[in-house]
Length: 305
Image (cartoon, rainbow, N blue to C red; front, side, top):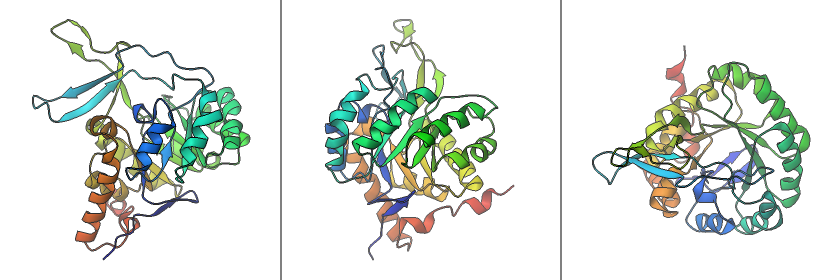
């Protein structure tokens, strides 16, 4: 039996549901995305661009490990958005990444004015969709609705909002945002968090506080994806701790339509993308499924209140 890993997200067809994540694996230039494409990823996402380049304090990434150093359970990072001007992506990077033939999302931030400036530019440059990032924490979704409207009014592309794990009432946010986006991405990194080198008596990161990603936050990501999928029929892209094919299956059972892989690509390199897809396909075949879509949302019936 041949298992189909093809999915469609907001009308965009993907050969498999694994996107590159938004961070170091997409940093620098489009060559990183091209390498990911040749290692089995299904879709590409640029590093988050904004109207001004980020200034990142170094070191900016640290692996948190148990006593067994082979198994990092999370990364801390004080990365910001892209450190290079957005003009690189507009003038060169998008065209280069699109040469792979894979769908390309532009990640952007952060204010309504920033996104009004950037959205038409990335659309003209040829991206297939926009993911706009937020770290907004409040009980009131109104400011995010304003940003979502600004993006939607500035482009004809599908738009996806990436939500913080600190959102307090996810159902309320989703219902408020649903008319103004084509899909959701969940979750962003968790924090701020702090790790201290006890031999030196100082924080391990140059930015002092960091944001946590990796396997440690996967249960939070799964919960957010499930809660969003219970609230809306619009697609959800799951993010957080995806390292194996079984992680991909779990996100789909929670209602995800696709996933992004970031920390695993940092730790294990670009071959991890194809490995995750292959492992998921093998699991599906072993359990008698013919398509990744056959397991989508199967756990949601057990999560009804």
